[in-house]
Image (cartoon, rainbow, N blue to C red; front, top):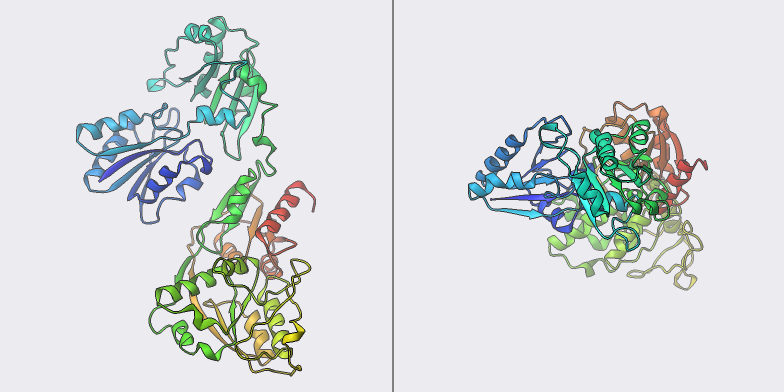
Length: 529
């Protein structure tokens, strides 16, 4: 039983502290504010209860007293309670009030500080809040008083103190703030800035002066959350502005996840400033219970000459099963390994296993054709490995074996394949192998179960896909989307064909890698297509 107040920072998932993330992952129940980003909310365990207690200026759907009571009630039930707050809990976050009732009732609690928007908002706008040439102090002031009244601010003291003034929650009171500063003797030409949605892809920054900031905010329809910065340090914003230089800043892309876990594509897009909406990935269920097809296949592993993987997930499920069942990996020493693409190959490399064959294109069809050619022309002595020269290009993995290892070609060499992949996998691979009379066992080692809560954002026209299964799930569950208006950026021809079959406008990355897919997305956003 414990309550943990966690500062989630201003929005950028990367600004959440490691300790904060660890505590969230252990939560039984999470009460969160409206300014906590979707990316951070995604860290909350599926089994945890989630309660939105979000408040905004003049709108308190869950009153503060009720939040305090909920924290006490859930904690007394023996639960691990997390109170997730934007910014820092103790910097105008009312964290002190929320601890009071807990302290009175002897409930153990902990506070995990967060990056306050007062500092992060300025930093992401290229404004150092202190600078030896301009400001030797900074002052953080709330622009929002109790019961929606204007706070009692001593503008004269602030003006005389000098330094940088940072007003939080001050959008509705921006006119009073600027008037108060000028009335207290501040030069109306003092540099000022306002930063909306700080650290997020939707961040907007406007530079002005104390005399013009109110008009600037009004013309640009500035909305909460926004931070107001007043002082000479604002003069440095243009020179030190790093965030607005991000390649995909302001762009909104949907990523339809084909597998759970950390999404390299999503993380890299966010690093480029992109707003990413993830359609929930499928749940992966290993089909490795006693008596499974995989167990039976491993009992006759010596009858196979090739082990074929069509996904990185398949690699992980297969080798996790070997470990969990106490198998000896040396039982696979005679096998040659095939991988459908570079991401699958990377997972094999993590386990110190080199791939003997990867097709030139990321597709089951290309994998089937390549294996067929090898098996028709290349008989291999038992327990031998084929040796391949380095690829000339990323797509040149369909290569001729080392001549020193070859015996004269024959139409068929009797080799048998073990294909370890998802249940109900695409038929392109097996169809081609059957047509070539190549012997194989198609062994389902996991299945995917998809959630049906997907919803395509109305302001987004671009979707990124890394597999045809992701396309099919997306098309089935993004019911509000007009598929013929969606621009689909795809890895591989099969993925593209699936998207095209649903009427989407398709572009294919040059290579079957995440980096190449991001390059294609970037080119599209720049209008290079």
